[in-house]
Image (cartoon, rainbow, N blue to C red):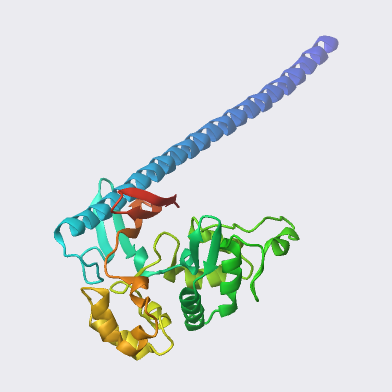
Length: 320
């Protein structure tokens, strides 16, 4: 009888152990399911966020593109209905206030590329295989750099970068300077296609680029500067006798109907020093920079474009 009782007690203990083990397994399975469900929920939320971000990213791009289109329409209207001169008091100049487009807002800004100094105008090209330095333009760029507190000697490596020859300017740099770099490359030996290219040139740092880039362009084929849209510091760079006060006075008398009237305001002494003075300036423009930003919820996209109004084509297009 006692033997049977012991077996029953043993069985009861075994059953209790087994039920405890089953409970433990059950808890582990439940915990595993909780982890799996949490992971699925987390991944689903992440996928929804990613899908939302992609949606907003794409929407912001199209809102920015609509902003570019709106700014182009302003330029087209100016071309059809405004006078024969382009100047800074016209509707197109400056920043447009934010305006709603779909679920977002767009804002835009237009600047005249002809109001800037064209780096490619540093060289004249008498033939397809020869070039020579334009002394007037070189002196102007050196003065511009001085006004911007940038080393004017940097003009020389810019010339060496775009000229056809292999002879270095006094403070310049030809292929031998760049070939010894960790990642070697050669000079362009041709006109600049985009302004960012000058970051490859000896001495042009990011800080210097940020300082000089607002006043420079590479898109004006004839190199002429629109005196009605030029920054005062560009006007000062024309001649060393044009100080800040004179540049301000020139700005106040804008717009000029032609280069002759600008020359009269500037003073005949300066104009007569160079018989081809008027060949370097203009009062009309056709190439403009447009920067438009589209914002949808917390996502923004910015498009930088250079638009040729006369040819109705992009010369530059970059999305950020």
